[in-house]
Length: 116
Length: 109
Image 1 (cartoon, helix red, strand yellow):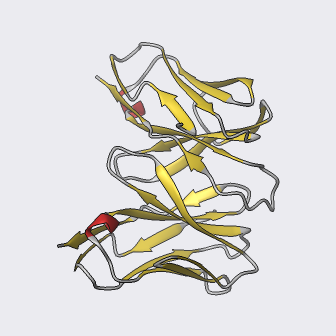
Image 2 (cartoon, rainbow over the protein chains, first blue to last red):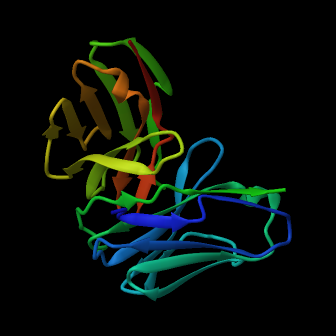
Image 3 (cartoon, one colour):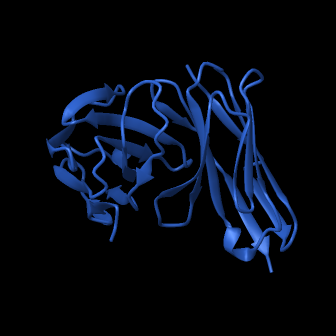
């Protein structure tokens, strides 16, 4: 069984459109994340939710809106897509978030978003 | 602001050779350091997690060391195999996890 699953795997869309990426984890983890990996392969955190509560919001444009209906799901909605949004978006989860926590992250396989 | 650097960016070795991957970070106030493996078109797989109070962690052919005071970690992979070909990323955790750009490893059969 896939631990962290995200859909779709590929997403090709035009500038100005609105799209969503879904993520689900079956690990029973409390914390979920969205990361963006750019063309230079740098992974940067976008958001983190702990028990459906927003914990981290890293200077992401407000066109990006995460939604966590329950602690097993964290979806990412993107409005008015721009060329620069093209990247691979990864969902991840961990057991707990607390500052000194040492739980490893579990990643999904990524969604490759291409904006044309 | 935490910055994580990995050197080299790419590495190609013949099968059987030991691999040494380096990671450095600028702020030593971290809770842990993690090493991940990323295969093309796939997500990241956690390999080792070293807590800030630890000096090293081992798992099978993998050994990772941490020198927090100097801001360095090294991942050793013994007796490399073609299946070890992947991109290896290190990440350090303060209030968030900050990643390096990775080292892409090719092990030639």
